[in-house]
Length: 453
Image (cartoon, rainbow, N blue to C red):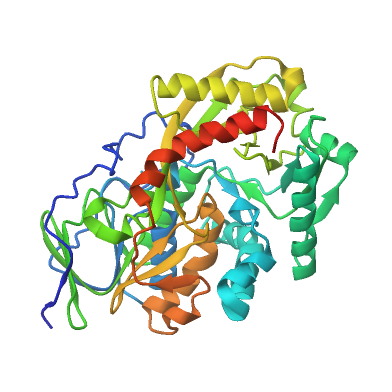
């Protein structure tokens, strides 16, 4: 049946640039690419003038994971990526696999926000997320430098300790495997005595996120789905049971459409682009630590995220470099400012190391919705968008992908996906908030330096 009805995406050019003008293909400076043991496919599948059960716009962790689960369910699937697999936030993030919510939301908070049915279901998926990631990696033989040695949330102040204790007690009451560490145990785990206490999720860990994307792409292909790289979607017209996506070489037909572009969603998608804040973040890696120091710093190779207002998180990479990250400085020398901040943060948390040189630096964009939780946006009958992981995408994308595949297969309804759902709506004061984000982050850094967090 020919597509007809309203054009959900107009004919304005999407190109291969993010809303900021950042070229998505420019992955040369991303540290994970240089050391990735797995590479994505070089070629693209032919998708033009073909019809699929499901078309997925976006070839990151979310889109590829849904594609894999949908193909396993017998659906014909096409992934349309405007640049290359993993070119956006999925290949640029810190790679943490964390079974805890952003903004220190607790399971009880999520139940209040999502209700008695969706809330517990999402809690269960997140708690089991690292195990699901591990099983996915094992099942498909994905070499992505994965280490699942545990994740900690340490507290740097009395107020932070109270917040950490609340999260620990809430997850324990939910039934998750968690541990409480006093000051001495925290110092032993992290190799620094700059924190008062911590709670640990033993299932947590980290991966090379670009390598995970590359491995997922290979698994998607092996499952019979198509991946079309360098294929920006120029237009989307809703039809009666069949939708048409316009690409440079023609059109692609799809009975269902899922948009997974997250922080790289362009303004041509209207309210979908303005439903979240696309925050520019950086990741930095220090010079390699010496072998003696490596035995003391994060000796069990765990990772951690603290409770500062401008949260600090770190881990070791495969070559013994310490990771640091933050919000990109808005003015002047962005890279220089980011490197200086990363060096100061490392010196604050690990003062015994002295000044460390920052060797690698890169940037990406992360989508933050109003409630800090992923959202399923209904763009029309059989047309959805999903995203807004708020820095928890490596875990949440894998945990929620099976539910989204079931939705695409018609096995469940929108109300059965355990996240908030509804039509696309502009975030209130979106333009002002987007402009203010870097400056608010600088304010939070000042609050942390003054010891007020």
